[in-house]
Each structure stands twice: as C-alpha cells, then as structure tokens.
Length: 113
Image (cartoon, rainbow, N blue to C red; front, side):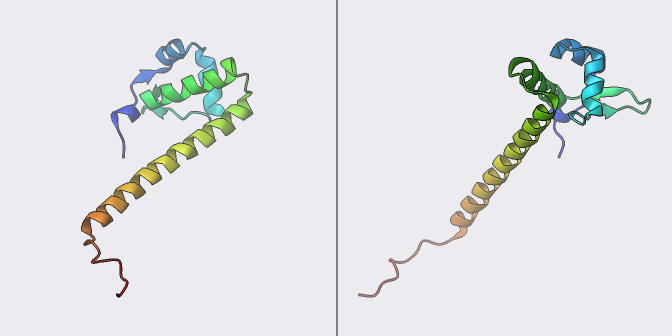
C-alpha cells in the first residue's frame, strides 16, 4: 500500500539542502543500502517524504549521536522492525476487537450451583 508519504517528489539537490548534506553523501548512503530513492525512466533519483524522514534519522544518528555508518544501518533496521511490530500489534488489536464484537456475551460463569 503506497501513501502520499511514499510519493517520490524531491530531487537529490533539494533533499541534500533539506537534510544538510552533500548530494554525494546521499549517493553514498544509497550505495551503502541505507536509502533507496525511486528512479525515473531517465534514471534520475526522486525522494519521498518517507525517504526524507529516514535521511534525517541517519543524519541525527551519525552527526548528533556519534554512531558510525554500520551502527546507523543496524539502528535503522531495528527502528524499521519496531515499526513493523507496532503495525502488527495494532492489527491484532483490531482483529481482537472485531472478534469480541461478534462473540455473544457468556451466560453466567460456567459453574453449576
């Protein structure tokens, strides 16, 4: 499922300015597998709002927290996994609520007197 957050709208020069890094740094992050911008038919990179948020997290990890590139990659993978698990938990809660809504209330507590 794609959202507006996933729409590729920013070119590399704009993203570099917004994040505060050189365009070459963005290309390096891409080669390192930290980011995967969309490509046009002409092979031009386009970044989404989600890419921009991820790049800001990378910059914070490296510049503000002193994490190296390998550490940033691990941290990002962990953040991605936490996000996936949060989505799974939210879906399970919805499923549980739907099930509870369909289940008739119990008659008594099941014990005989």
